[in-house]
Image (cartoon, rainbow, N blue to C red):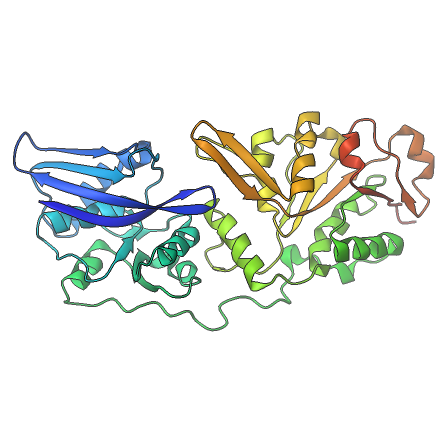
Length: 390
């Protein structure tokens, strides 16, 4: 018997519908095959699904089972296909009926049949709505994130047993309803650093206020201990609040990257990213066989802070120039190109180089580039001298 179940894949920051086809045949020796360019995590789904079905009180067919993930030319990654494969087997074996409506199934199975958190839920649910699907079944832990998308019914699933009972009409799952006020207030301060609590450095604070208002890039030059890092960390607190559209963009990025806080389904604070100076080109720009966002994209609509600027590799600094101009970054791979958003405010800090040591106590603005950093990069930034407090 053949069963078809819909699921989703994530390509860059966008989703792609994947049709999970399950065929159970009585001919040939019993085996369980997954085809359609699955990666290691998808191949391992065979063991998770087999154990999950048996430990949920269902019968795993002792037959030849073939699972096809279509389209076949799209590489499938991650454990999100566990649930659709399991449901497809239960439907094909006649243990549960097919869903009445066009539905999408997402989720990783544990060996006892419970569902676990899955990355990239937000872009996948958004695509499901665009393609006309009426409902989506996601792990209970991801229901709040999925409910950010309007116009589609979200059913939170705790276990395979619960979903099977729902499909049989025994114990229907209630659609998830977003709780009012689940997003933290705008008064929340990240890392406990607030711009208004910083004393001194009035000339620098004034310059940062102007830079923040226009999203201008800034390099702060000053001796160690003068407060450069503190000023940078406090800068997001004076930036304008994100709009709903901007918040959804940032949330989608962090969902795909697997960095979305479990207690905050919608990110409303502007990101602040401060990578170490040993970061690689791929870590900053993004990369991987299936490209994932780098620090540049994780800073979208927020601040990217490069502390100890001259310590960064020259090639890494050069890679920032194009995103600063285009507000996006394109990662090329053999399978195709993926474009990530990169609209961020660049901030950097460095110690005075020798010929400016004597000027570190003066206030004002300087435009002298560092010989150790990228001249094209520094030409796109305004330099500020930060003096040590007396």
